Length: 286
Image 1 (cartoon, rainbow, N blue to C red):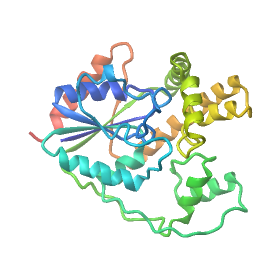
Image 2: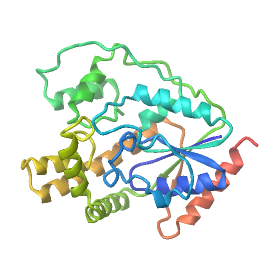
Image 3: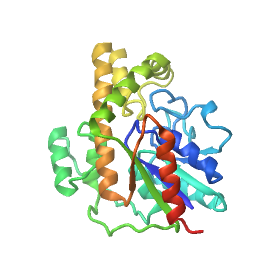
């Protein structure tokens, strides 16, 4: 079976995935767009070696930060992994919904036009996108993705269908106020673990690559390193952007996929894990 673990950032997906892989003798496959990249560790909250407990982790650290990687690339890579490990249970974990959709569903990529949107502001582009898809999961300041979305030849496609049998979607969530508090605390912890030093090293080594210029936690600190904003402002901007991203993640998964949601019990996470075990055992194909 394929167990898909989704949810906004900061709700415990990594810890849950380890537990699921141990119980169901599975391998863990990444579905986070930033964790594809080597050396982006602290800022992406990537699983540490000592946390893996010997479980195979696939599609992590497969690209250098100066290499491009698309949703289409991920679709091919995930389907190859699913074929290679078809005799094992798969734990697909991550917060990049489009990766999950492209890999597991009969998702087709639209042909691209080359219209010029240079006369429009980011806000105007975002409003145009919202008229096409009110649940669009693109940051209003990500101009490249906004223009790409508008340049797709076909906006409305058929309802995508799952290509695989026995796929179980589970999601972790928590009340918004608690989520935002935990995101803020996690950002502070990232700085204690050396996030600034990580970003400075990568920026000096690779320059402002596509991923470093778009990933939350990296793009804000690059502005600080370029003396565009203060360190304090960059920290607050990381927290703000992380909170907004978490909200968009929740909205996307809620509207795009049939996910069974579980409240994360931060006091006793094992209780949450047990609830998910019971759910999976009840509905999985024996």
